[in-house]
Amino acid sequence: MKKIFAKIHLWLSLPLGIVLTVVCLSGAVLVFEGEITRALHPELYQVAAPADARPLQPSQLADRIGEQMPDSLHLVSLQLSARSDEPCMAAFRETGRKQLSVDPYTGNVNGWVESPAFFGTVRKLHRWLLDPPPSKGEKSVGKAIVGVSTLGLVLILVSGLILWIPRSRKALHNRLKVSCSNGRHRFWHDCHVSLGFYATLLLLVMALTGLTWSFGWYRTAAYALFGGTQQTVAAQEDLSRKVDSGNRQSRARSGERTAGREHGETETRPFDHAVWDDVLEQLTAHYTAYKTIVLTQTEAQVTRRSAMRRIDRATFDPRNGRLAEITRYEDTPRQQRLRGWFYTFHTGTWGGIWTKILYFLAALIGATLPLTGYYLWWKRYSNKKNRK
Image 1: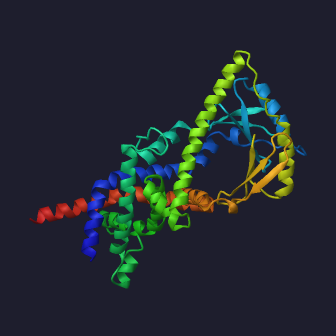
Image 2 (image 1 turned 180 degrees about the horizontal axis):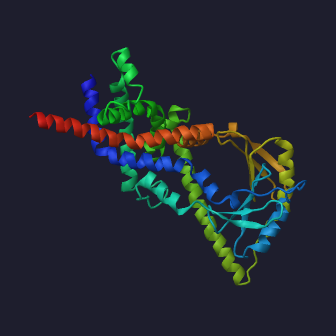
Image 3 (image 1 turned 30 degrees about the vertical axis):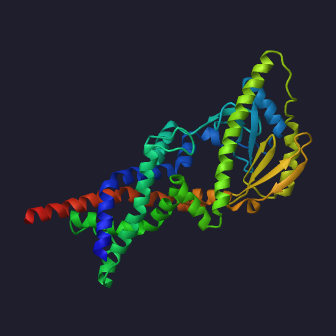
C-alpha cells in the first residue's frame, strides 16, 4: 500500500512542486502584512492621546475632514476605534477601499492608508500567479493552476503523512528530529520528513480553506458540510453578485447626480453627519466593550473584541439617528459566518499573534518541502543510474 502512496506523492510533487513553493512562500510573506505595513508607517496607525482629552464627535470629525479635503470627495463612513492611541479611518465614495487616517482628537488628516504595492503584487502571485481574473468570480489560467496545485497539495500531504508513519520506536525517534551531524544528505532528508510532519496539519488547514476561493463546487460543498445548505450558499453567491452589480450602478448614478449638479439640477438633501453623534451615543451605551465602530449613512457596524472577526450590524433612521434594529453576529446567516471562519483559518488570524507565527513557520516549511523533495529524488535517481 505504501508503494502506491509513494507513487502518488512523487508524481504529484514533481510537476506541482515549483508552483507550491511560490504559493507557500508568498503566503508566508502575507502573514504579517498588517504588522509590516504598520511598522513602515506608524504615523498613520498611531496617535498621541492628550491627557484628559476626549475624541471629537463624528460630526466634528466630518467637518474637519471636509475642511482639509477637496469638495470632489464625498465622505461615506467613519471607523472609530475603542483604543485611545488609534486614529479614525475615513472612507470616501470616490476612493474605493483606500482610507484616510485622521487624528480623532484634533481632526487633522495624517495621510492615506493603503497597502504597499509590494504586498499587492505578492497577493496576486499567491492567488493567481500574477494572472488575476477579469472580475470577481471569473476564471483565469493562473487561478486554475493555483487551484489545481492546492488540490494536489492536499493529496501530497496526506500521502506524505502515510509514508511518514514509522515501523518502530527507534524510527519514530529519528523521524521527529533533524540531524545536523550525519552529513548533508541526512540533513536534507530530515528537513523534508521531520519538518514536513510538523507542518502538515497547518498546511492542510491552509489548503482546504484556500480551495474555497478557487472552485465554486468546492466552496458550495464545504459550506454545506458545515451547515450551510447548497441552496442557501448558491443564493448567497447570487446575492453577492447582485450587490456588486448594484454598487456599480450606484456609483454610476452618483456620477450622474454630480453631472446634474454641474448643470444646475436639484438633488436630494445631503446627509446630516450630526446623526452619527446620536448613533454613536446609543451604541456605546449598548456595548460596554468593542473593538471598532464603523458609521455609514444607513447602518453601523460594531466589531467586538475577539480573535475571530465578529461584527454586529445596527440599522438606524438617517433623519434622526434612532436605532431601528441590531443584528448580532450570531444571528446572521450561517454561510456568511462560514466565509469569515474560512478566511481567519486560512490566514491564521483566529488565534492572534501566536497562530500567525505558527502559520508563518508552516508556510515557510511548505515552501522548502518541494525543494528538499527534488533534491532527494535527484540523489536517488543519480544513485540508481550510477549503479547501472
